[in-house]
Length: 231
Figure 1 (cartoon, helix red, strand yellow):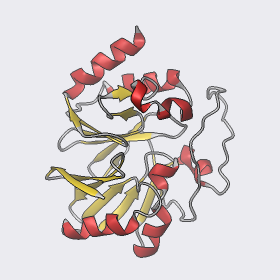
Figure 2 (tube, one colour):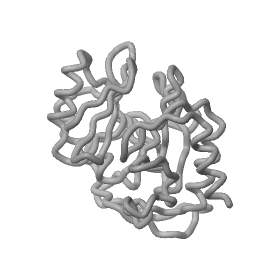
Figure 3 (cartoon, helix red, strand yellow):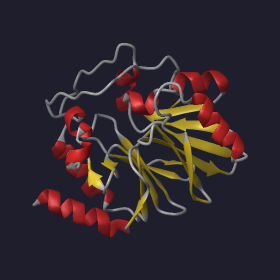
Figure 4 (cartoon, one colour):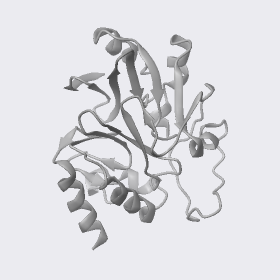
């Protein structure tokens, strides 16, 4: 697992060159945003130890396998850890996942591995909530219940799969041809674009996505993507 220091507040952890999760430093230890694929728990724990702080919380952007794969293994090693997710993600985290759409949601199917987890979610986060230093933002589109998180200390947006940055920054559904996988597993391009527009309301300085390198460019970079997608 590759470890990349973003700044004093956060560390990017990358597995297989493509799948990211993030350690965000708070006053009492780390919040881990997503857990990557199965098999990564040992490396995640080692990275936190090397950075000198324990993992106190696990915060999920959404329920796909490459974001929740190591949840159960980590929870076994971290007794008492807080596991936080959006309420809409709860049925998707079950075994088997319940993909029933709710009233008012687009009647479109969505794919991607939904393995479910055994660990109970202990904290429901709501859009608008400040979870430690992280402002929780509803960003459905890739999948129901997707959240992004803005670190209000430095403007880093942990975007999960609402955005991706393989090769270039892109809104999910408008991915470059060489990283087309999100197009085939996503739910609603209409909601994805609405979510990107919602993100324009926030003071974003850099983008830390579930896939790809951390990219700078501030809110102007996202505004340009939204304009192109809207055209």
